[in-house]
Image (cartoon, rainbow, N blue to C red; front, side):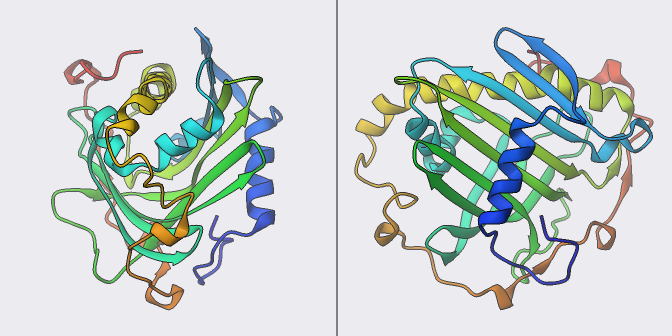
Length: 266
């Protein structure tokens, strides 16, 4: 996403178009999982499996595209459904459709937990919606001792309207976890973690309208920019987060039998 350069930038129409093409194309993707309405694909060489691209797709009956778009933006609601999240908050606003935020993620035990600082941008296109992000450095949010700072090379969602009151959700991610991970972790992501995450988002979409009615129903700064109270910030405050500048830990020796599976089964 950072175009291989040194400058932080806000994604433009060509970036969103490229992201949509990657979501919808099957060329170069290998199906790893296809069950109960959820499909998972991967792309990448096995020998460099820790930085594979993973793509997932789920059909969401009875959830309109605009509802799922709200779900994925609403950080307050996220705390209700995303059990893998440790903490998330918005840091600052760049434009009406771009901001910078922090997210920390509870990895399956015994792996160390990861966190990210990302530049996120979003684009409604008629009945379809896209949200994409990539990692940046912010001087006030350096790596923390209690997390491994991971790098999102490109991560995002494509929500496509699919008939009356239904949608299709794509999630595509290419992340450098800053750790040499055992191969069983990669397999588990495609077979268990990714499908379960998609099902959680779907269920969250079903429950969101009722929750939102009771929690500031008119407050949607991702739809109404005038409601956004985040401090404005400039791109000059940010720099590209290069993976090779971060600590790389070796977790290849961690045995699968010690894995905590309680929250990571499909």
